[in-house]
Length: 147
Image (cartoon, rainbow, N blue to C red; front, side, top):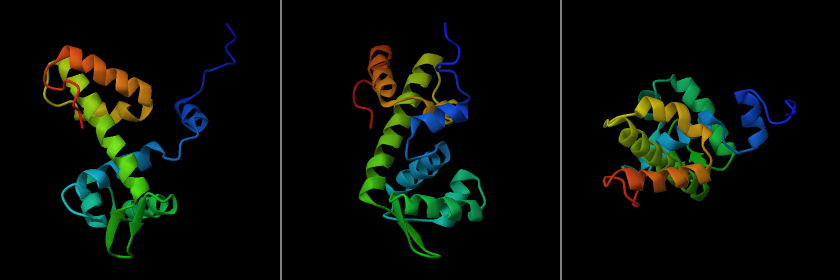
């Protein structure tokens, strides 16, 4: 076995993935998507409260997400998802739900939020889809229609 191939730190794997979103960006975009299912826009103060972070941290992340084309934000105002942001956010919510249903079925619980938040960033789309299929076999509660 050649140990120089394939082994990285977590940061190394993230950098090699070359994705547009970091784990932190995913967390914010997922929450924005969750909140915009109730209202068309969200405010920095809402994100700050929901994610338990300072408003200044939210402002910085909102700027990054805006520069990447996922959201539009009004200065001192509302944050809106773009089409790109809505598509990415919908996937992030789907991924969260799939992993949550799987872990709840596996652990015979009704809440695995902390574990989901810790691992969701590290699973690719194929694994998430396969978890959805496996969960459908484990439980009737999440069979096939996880959205």
